[in-house]
Image 1: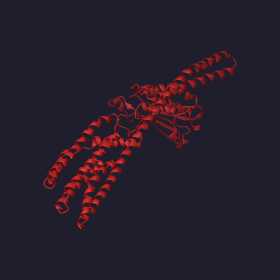
Image 2 (image 1 turned 120 degrees about the vertical axis):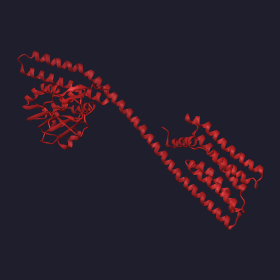
Image 3 (image 1 turned 60 degrees about the vertical axis):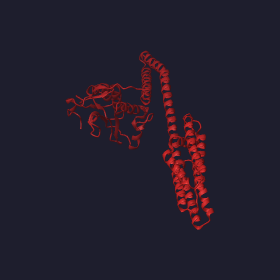
Image 4 (image 1 turned 30 degrees about the vertical axis):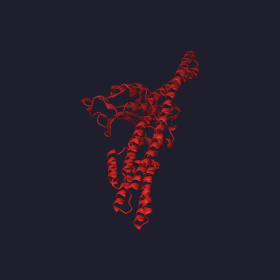
Length: 454
């Protein structure tokens, strides 16, 4: 990326080439009027020469700018255009300074008034277009006004001295105003430069993040491929060992633990890959109508025995007639995660799965699924960190958790177009709610049945 000085130079060049439009009509009229004023007081040859040189310098500038525009488009010639524009401003200033010199008559107040009006108008009009580059502005200002100031001072009368001082004060005020305008121009240019630099940095960071994500995905894919076979082999060896244990209870128990550990490793590999796919955006959801009653029945069949073994009551509310538009695999995975965590972290009591309406959501997305347990609960300070990947908590069965489940559930909920809310406190259990699901057919009378728990 160009340095700030180069960027400022390029901006000024483009400004002179494309933003400064020469006022042909007004300058032509003023020049013709000035020539008419000089016609009877200045030799005709001098007047015509003055008019011809002024016209030639203006045309030369326009030809030069038009010639330089294609070069600017190619990223070349910026400094040359600024230098050429400065020379043009100098010639223009000399032209109007020459008008003051030729037409000046110390004994004619009207002449002094006309010259002063002409010069002040031109100088004032040049501040806005030329102050972006102070050398260009001074190249016009000084040769335009200094001859007039010198002529007034040379008259040596009190009136001319006062007019000279006032003109010099006007020159200084215009220079100060030009400096202020130049500072505003430069601040704007620097702000744009900083914005472009920040945008470029953000694009680089984004590219680096995308590359890191791609690399992580490739790494995880490679790791999973390399680990699947040995883990499967370990599981098979454990099964063989268990079958060959015979009456040796210790060996059979060890073989069963090996199989369970291998299955856990396989599950974590699957979760790592799933989370990577979700975070990279490579997963393509398949939304379809999902019957929640059928899904609840499947959850009951999957977790009833596990809950019974821990002495818990697993209660799933009736969900007949309720159907959502979602990717069934993703929705089932989220709910399985919630129910599994609830059972693992509840020592006694009930795990409840039901429906609720939340009117804070837009129509058609007010149906929510909640999983409530009577477990130990989660401290408030840990709730914001609950969905961070690779983080687990001692009071949330950390020995069995690798911090991937809830992170995966949050990513899956995002793909479903919903979000997850958590309400928990130590000793009061936890409630995980999946909200924002789109109902499959909001016009169906079945979906308006009052079977949703309050």
